[in-house]
Length: 434
Ligand SMILES: Nc1ncnc2c1ncn2[C@@H]1O[C@H](COP(=O)(O)OP(=O)(O)OP(=O)(O)O)[C@@H](O)[C@H]1O
Ligand SMILES: O=c1[nH]cnc2c1ncn2[C@@H]1O[C@H](CO)[C@@H](O)[C@H]1O
Image (tube, rainbow, N blue to C red):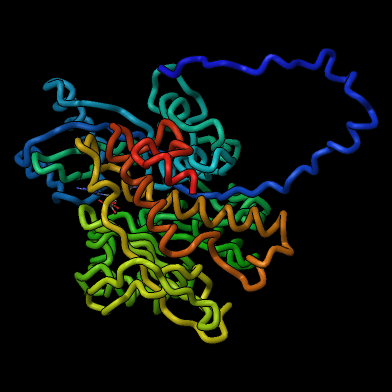
């Protein structure tokens, strides 16, 4: 409960009677708006704590996201329902979570491409999905379909590991015609997930995603890819390396996905390797915190004032105060890395790790979109003398992503219910008075 608080007592009645001369002086120029867009398989997460024996019985490899047929989905649902194992049901989908969190953090618009059931009953999964999505996420470009949206059984093992079983419903029925070219080309970024590449048969989700990528590339809009699960990448790492090289500006992954992609278990080395194929990398590493890696122009590098960190690349964070740039925008690109340990060591009680990585990516996207916003409204700012990909430094982005991940860990749902506090309760007042 937030208390109503005190309000100012000054009122203007009627508003139109303000001094017409003075009013001219106070006219506010409307700033140009920015937004990001994303594509997802529309899914509701059905969360249940289960024994490993259940995973074995349904042939669900631990930690993976496996597509299951309708029959298995029905049996699985009945079983967890009858045993009262279902703890929560939330709107999910990795990109759905990311754009929702972006809209909450930025208090601004994002656009989601995907499908939505044509006929929606109150209480159905489609209804819940809509109810649990921020009103700042523009859902007007969802493609109406005849069937239900997807269900993602989010099965939590004793150790906290998550195993996903996907009953796809009509989630892959998005068609390329429903990707709005103008929306993609005027956005600050297009966000996609590796999961979109596994549609099969007549389902056109993969083609729809490739169409959106094509539009984004034509307009130089950054394409941001999040890897989803290591199992998907392990199937053909070379294919993914080529995919990233051909299409991706920013890559988001966790350390397992990084290892599947590059063969390197060290998240720093995996991030470095991935920089051969894209411009920037966000690598989350669970309790070890997270890394950002990317490029900056040699003459614009900025030295950190933090302790230089040891690692597979000694003193790797030396230039973490630099801003990320696309490699092609640098005459003499240098690689820059930053790392941060979990905010305050992680929450006292981790309620749910589901979506912490999606939260971290949303923070990065917020920083990126803030840069586009600033550039389109104050193009003459010295900040934009050289083209930066983000508004802040590698180091700041680490802090922000880490803080948002903490917030997701401290709550039940993978989607933020509110933005971060303007001021951290935990910091001394003196910090703000500096
Ligand atoms: N056990 C933990 N203790 C403290 N912080 C954690 C812990 N697990 C995760 N975090 C924080 O959350 C961030 C993201 O976590 P993680 O690497 O597990 O993401 P992920 O596997 O991509 O998650 P998801 O796929 O659910 O979005 C980490 O970088 C770290 O800041
Ligand atoms: O196949 C999939 N497509 C899209 N999203 C998925 C898939 N499998 C799992 N998740 C989503 O990943 C989120 C955590 O990062 C979960 O909320 C889950 O819905």
